[in-house]
Length: 218
Image (cartoon, rainbow, N blue to C red; front, top):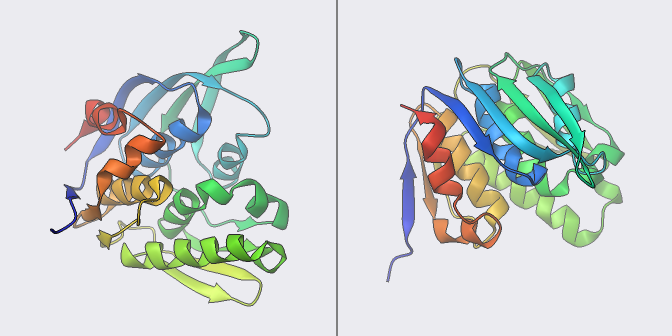
């Protein structure tokens, strides 16, 4: 029996308000809103643990327009994120960045592929073998979706093209991090994307598709 798949069509923008407490779950929405022209998205009640929000810091270096307001403490530091579309520029991930962003490297790679200039992911040779394998999986997944990701001696390079990537097809092989990236890539691409086994997303983010659909404009 053929594996189930979902076809994700390109979007014009993401607009609206959502509540997503976990930053890693908010991250795909931040990427979509940053890359889709005309987006205006507010993500409420996000936990702003400094150890968990490295991707937001990296996106700020790239020129993303992400404003934090209504900061408060409810046992943890919490705030609301207002995200607007922006023209991103390339950046280089240090060894520390790479280590902190392992789970979010697919989303970073997608953002880098739509930015001005060439980005680099450094320090890969100092990772554990299974983490180096993950970097290679990220590279092949990005290429399957029209992102120009290439091997380098000490890591991975992503050539930015500040237009929408072509899109393509992705089999995440049960990894929700890749499946979510594939869905966002479909939204920001020219031709959309086909993602195999979208049910894997529910492992880490139940209700992801419904929440994304609620703010997507086509």
